[in-house]
Length: 279
Length: 257
Image 1 (spheres, helix red, strand yellow):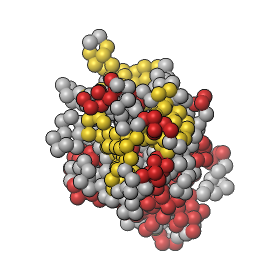
Image 2: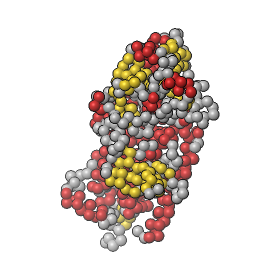
Image 3: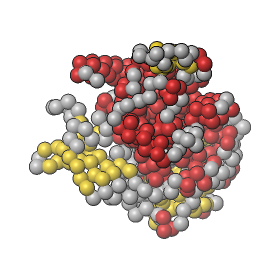
Image 4: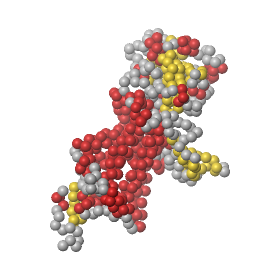
């Protein structure tokens, strides 16, 4: 008899995962927003070692068009009118020239010096927090047990099935929900193994002091301006991850997910006789 | 998800967002809080010094890498009368003063500076704003000048006093540009007082007649229009006491990052 599945709470996230997750939320939010403040000091990006001022691959600026100021974003040879968002933004009547709008930067007003202070303080928190997570993940088995996909999960048929059900916003609720599904595993691995470390390495590559320490690192990224571009692109990828992550957190059971990241307990639906703390 | 719930979530999100922004602005205005943030500057400096050889060189480039659009920044043309008088005379009356905590104060003409031991280097100039330009610099090695002046043992910093007033609105007399470095950077082989840029006499917009090159730090440390090199034990009492024009205005004194 399993007409109405019972809800049981299972242990989902360890203490280290929960603490490092929320510290990372704090650090990454502040780093993103102070980073945009720093970007705004020169809202243009280049490839190579040096800036080619006439040919940024992306730029945000104010231009007078027909006697009226407009925010113009260029991407290669293409131009977009982004008035109100990029290049020229702010309340009607009090608009100003800035790359990203004030609601996206820390502080909200223009201050490169303050933006750098926030950025470099929380960069330390981000790095130390990340190292704790990594060390614990590797030694304690979190990476091996929870994040590395199993051979079965990596079968093409299974991956396609997961993609199809995710696209329909259908998520496992029962026994399968005890472990991360393959899309979760691959995405989290991409973030913690590729994107977050890439932020640190490209960030360090922009430091003239650290360039003298380890000249090979900046070469790996193709020069300082390339490192700045990759820093920006990697941060953009993290923003996309966060947005998708938040949508899926809401769609797959908001309170259950939030509780599991605070108390560690996650509710799954089981058919009658299965015990919750079996895992 | 129902429309109500979606609207509720959007409302909560927007409220939290504006609280977050206002909170960050208030914290930025709080000196105690910014004092805490500032601690990271010491960690960064300490960590970089710990892992970096004192003499580790900044990357040097080839002539093909030199920027054709090297961007001048800060003061482009000082309006200070004393500087303009020197400029009119093509710096014939210029003297580089080396004094402070030294046994043998110096007063050198440009010809004497040019005759001092020199170094030529093609390096990348990284502005705190985020852009980079590559230029070729030739100048007098600061270490040789300091050795000639014989630093006293209590000297800990080298201060560069400049000819340009960058902030004429400053009422406390701190509108003049200046910068300072410690002895590790002062004795670094690539630290020079440059009088040539890209094989030509240093142009006014880039700091004629002399500009500091301190290649492992950001652009604002590379003081232009250097008039006087002073050895000191402490940065207190100079400008607003933070060791430089921009450090006095909230930027890091250690600009290796």
